[in-house]
Image (cartoon, rainbow over all chains, first blue to last red; front, side, top):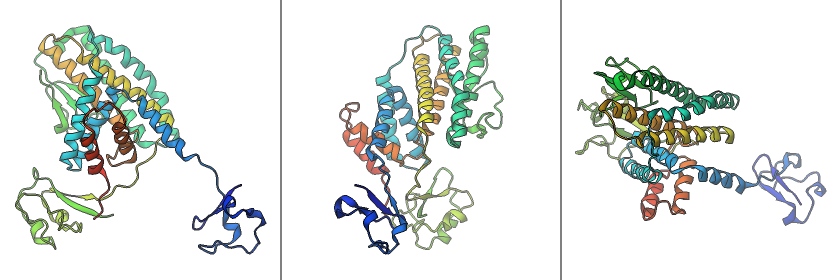
Length: 207
Length: 163
């Protein structure tokens, strides 16, 4: 038993309901809704509707508390831009709760971070390739920015490895609020070198 | 697309041109905001404002771009790594002021990278289907304990307007 959908108006001829094969219908059969002719009907492809949602739920399960905290702090920023102050407060609160649940990872040396950073840097080429092939400009943009920023972080860690924390002697350190670019120095460029936002969006990090 | 006007009071320099052009008097308020009930979304105030303090906000947002599962998986993997790097940097012992600033800056950078990446995995628009799905799933989980009411409020605050 199949279902045939009118390509014009969406009316569904359900063989199970009518107990008559669509093919057996007279040639002059027309859609009872829009009067489209029999040849305007197409066999309905059974899309398993629930699968999509379940798949998405599975993906959500994979979000760790750390990621959920990050997701919520970003959503807070998103609603702030729409002047939804009340929603922003609630997203910030959720973000802090998830951050607390994630907790910190006890680490002895800042250079331990570099191992994860190197793994990230090995991922970008393939990820950008997929984004390009899928025509996903948004994802591609985010990947390009975070790859550049990750390389910046690696270069800062390399400098730190050689010179220790003297790299910050009498020097300010700024983070771009938009892309995460880190600037070490006292003469901020007019725009962020990675995302090109004006420098007032780059925040000085205090001790 | 139906819109309404919002005034950024940090930019408003009280030039009052919005008052001259508003056909309904929605811009003439005591609290500095535009009267939501009176605004018909014509955009005249926004065009007239010399300080560009008024933005037109859409009532409803169009559906956002969908992403392939493959790219979402890639993004999640990177975001997880950024989240863990932030947690590591925050789990370092405090040392010199210089060191602390460095660790803090890199932690912040990782958070911003993570935010930007996750945003592009379906959460660009807070009113989008993925965000609502995320919040509804939270409601059915034990993650949030007693915050059920707040999450319900969030869902309500993000639901489409019907003016």
